[in-house]
Length: 361
Image 1 (tube, rainbow, N blue to C red):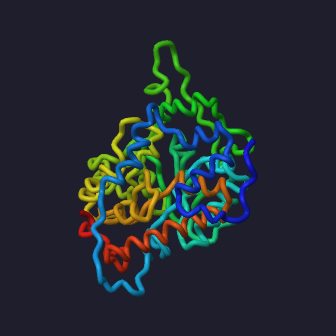
Image 2 (cartoon, helix red, strand yellow):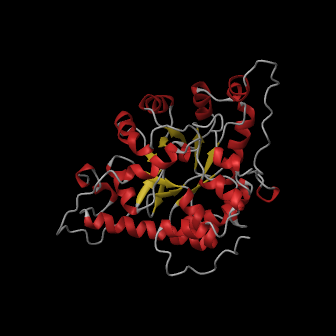
Image 3 (cartoon, rainbow, N blue to C red):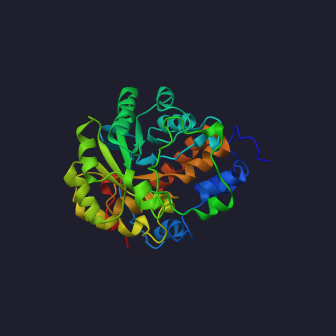
């Protein structure tokens, strides 16, 4: 039996790790396996977190950083900090107010949240509760007409950007989730989309190649999509520099270096390991964001030093949501922002623009 979410923050919650420790008491066992699990042997999942610790910061002393700040601008929106809430599906699994609570917290804290196609509230209902800019995460809906319908709904609801997830045309082999016999309950149903109808497979045909991948988008679809909307389109799930170069060439407004939280292809590179290569190829043409294993303000400094414009967090804010709803998510964002400020001050960085490779050893 899980506990009811907290209405006040306990004094021993002082980091993202503390929210993870608390959250297991507020999330059902099968849903916990779904949230925490990765693909197959979870090698990439583990590498995402472990890789950040391999990079060391080089402190500077006696720097004049008085009146510094963490403000930034992303895709036309002025934000108080570079911490973006990544798209996470079916958030009513973790708290009754789900996505509504998450976007409320993001807005109150001066940031931006990305609402998943697979949200458990309609994208319109989430937008009406927002106190800040929202981006909409888009999954290809099996065809252009169906995908365009979802885009037009996001435009009409006031979303400011589209985050197109490109790294999961087929789901990863999530053994931990399978062992827990997880399925999405009706209370957290994905209300924005209909279930895709796969082609009829004849004997000997592949469910992957002849089924899921026959409905998957290609670069031609990305070019078409960019022509259909005035919203900036950010491609999420880019790891290879050649794909980053193609993204810029077809007109993407940004890329997110991501491996889907280690949930799709196990043994894929950790995002930390490829960030510098993607930044180099993009060469300032568009912003580069990154997710995967961000747990501390020091991780944010390292990401920005390697050339990222901002970071996304996923599991950490779901841990906070499950523990204490919108209050928990807002508190987590505050903790990470304060850690970022301390790390900036101690490496001699007054603003985000001052963070560069000189802070790295």
